[in-house]
Image 1 (tube, rainbow, N blue to C red):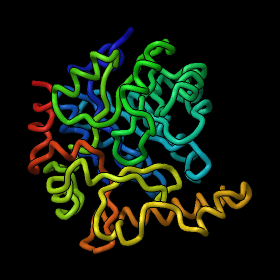
Image 2 (cartoon, rainbow, N blue to C red):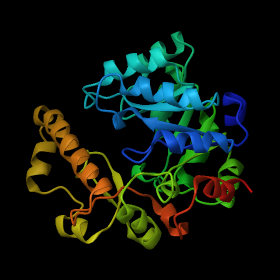
Image 3 (cartoon, rainbow, N blue to C red):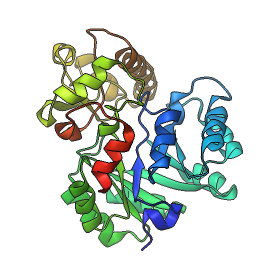
Image 4 (cartoon, rainbow, N blue to C red):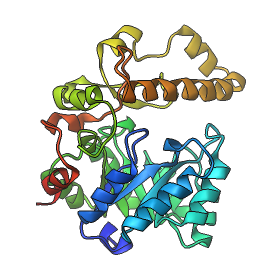
Length: 312
């Protein structure tokens, strides 16, 4: 089975995970210079042409491979425009999330771009494999942001035994021993996000970075209030105030198939605005995405040092 190093011709089998609002061009370039790869969410760019410009900017600084994360379900009203920009600008790979990647795989492959697909269970893993995905990103229950529901011990052996394409382990990686454990479970590589929030190159607020340093694994909770999908966040006083479970109206809407699609789109837009305000402003209404890997974040450091902790 190919490793991530074989697929992308990189030194270390590590992806700096695409993080909504967190990932930026400077972080990607720093990661590539250290021998790993990285990706940025298309959702971080709001105007037409910005994705293509970002890809061009990174390519002007390095010839190392990197990717773009694309939400492929109907909640992403800019999907077609984003996919067209990505195909035109040609990053090395696309990571698909939250929907069927069939069309994205077909179009990306026709343009020489590899596709890795986020999955949370065997059923979806086998489906994306049948579509021709180049690799599976196995998102487990330890991941920050949009998280899986299965533990690594439940998810990885099942995928390794039943899938025939490389599997990238995602969730809870903070140290070299975590990387080694994932590779020992049969992973072709790992995807690492949370620990890079507390980096010098990251542009989120100091409050967000300090929260990643000061809170621990016990402070991570799951909420469906941001996008309708399970999302791992830090249990701040504000989150404790609003709760992390759907209220009666949200439950009623989710039980109605007609209202559910509309409501999920509205909820996602409101949730994304809340995340934006929390990430870049000093506000008591803090909703910060992160995973249990914050347990091992003790300071704000350069990306070079963080990667050294994963590889040396």
